[in-house]
Length: 465
Image: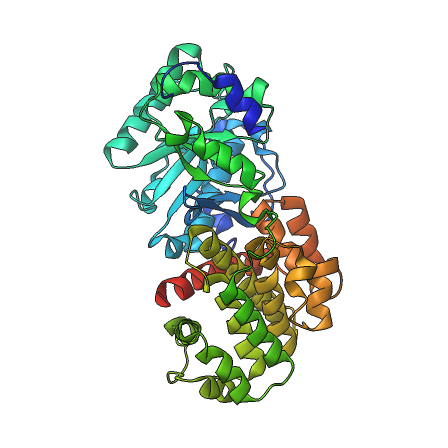
């Protein structure tokens, strides 16, 4: 789709939870619903907060997009409903302490244009948050909307929006330039039809809004990502990317397997086969950098060990084979040069692993089952990392049957946990709800586990550098 889109533009001008819903009733009560005249029926909770990891040109994770899914179709909602849901969403994110994620990252938080006068926005750190504006169908953008945006911008706040949502019903043509010229980040959704949705906007925006940068959402393949970042003119505008491109498996030429990854796989095979400590240690001596990296991960403060581990023998004694095997998976992602894509895949795998392990504990699984849930999450992106089919990537490892069944066949007792982690990444609200109900998990618990796992994955990466 990218090729047809950019081809049509060629030559057209210049560089163109835990506490999640316990506070909900209080927040709702403070919203002026009576003034709107709406008879509003709100859900008991806001449901699940989903996050989309956003990547830069090097495919590193640099931001998150937060959205709250609920039972009401928000784009069809009235002004009063928008106000209430915005207030509930803001209080939910604050109560979940999403700011823990923003030490080195940015956040995109969705609010409606109606909520620009809500004082709750001041609780978000202005240097870390972009507010993504959504239009309310029965309250079009006006000069007062523009004035409120100016007030926020004067206080350091930044804004984003998706232009295709702001049609003439909600944005008078006379105010289009007034609004878009104040927006820092323009969102383009590449899941739509290029000729009908994207090309007209991009054709105009390259020249009309030179200061704005672009966020490309729903990029489905690595090929589309490459076209996006390499197209003259438009390529310099894109700063954020989201979609399945990161996990796409590219075919790899024979003979190009990474030697360090192969060594790590051999060590993991030996560990699973019950090899002697000396045999495992001998493999590390062939590549001392691998041992250094492994000990760096194990000794990360995020793991809370009582003393530092200094050798493979100590690792086996202190952690045991199952836990050491778990940590060896990290070396698969960092054994080669730490390119942005591998590190991003590692972070996502760490998130899945921790998230699934935590949900397993909440669901009453025993210690070994939780360890295997962790492994399932860690290995779930091994095919994308090594650019081979999953069966080939896993073949040397002799994984527990329950882990292999979840990864290869999407079946077995661990499959719903993995599906829930993936659904959260894909913002599949209906599937998230169904899987949580299947696993008998409460939304607030899933939300807390979600944020905690994201923070933990960040800490492991930062503290092990």
